[in-house]
Image (cartoon, rainbow, N blue to C red; front, side, top):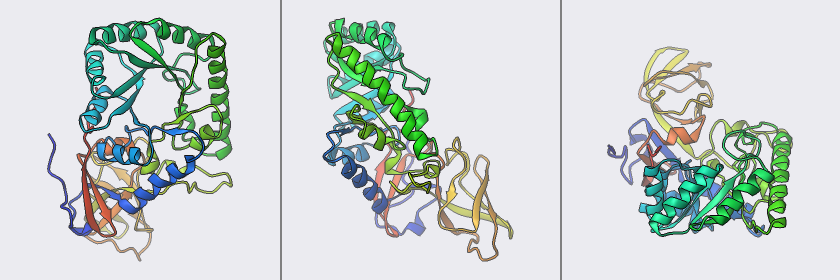
Length: 374
């Protein structure tokens, strides 16, 4: 059930109920433009990953700035986006099961829909479902870039799958899905560079092998917020799937740049707005944002606007702050911004974004794919 927004347009930020998912619109827009500007003129396309934001409004803003479409991970995410007006969606995942396949094919009559495969049985099932629906479905062969999650091995195994897609009467070979997810959070700049150099070598070798066997591969899609500069400069990747760049989070903030300092490519724009609900001692404050308000898989959030406070521990509905200096400002009823450790699962806990310009609410956006995990 979608609950009412915690704010109204025009309301001062301090009156927004908590916990709330707040977007600093100025920082958000700067992030949008920074990535678009970084790839302008390179010939590399943007296809941002909507699993980060799950919001059609944001997807359409990304496409207004030149993105060719968006990615998502689940059929239900694709449904929410397409029904809200997003007309080009790549499901960067393997779709298994008749129910999911029928739903995917239904979307293909409303928008450009593509998906991935890493097994011959998936190709057979996709072809049968596309034939029943009377469509031709673009399919990417997913290649293991080193993350050891989904993906067939590069080279001959990928060639075999590409041939099977080419031979399927109701499918078209769209290219290679070549995402190296585990490289995104390698802290050192050179570690990330080396990981993507290895991935690009695998993708290049596979692309060239396909070409030698008469299979053109004009699209190699992948990349993420932590590594996009390397894929964009590789001469191999044609499409970038960055997602978290619009918001950033505490974990991405730990990545280092070329000189060993904190990365400055993008800035935090997504915050959980929380209230101090208890102040039992001088060195402890309790806020109303715990495990049900914050994704904690990548560690606790950073406290954005009180340097003397550190988020120490979460329980279901409480967050404990450790206070290290008597000069802190926090008292009962005060509100603070928390930078989530991981933005994606944090977003999935909310129904609404509260867009704030300065200290006033300017926009309220529905998170239409919240809870879309099937």
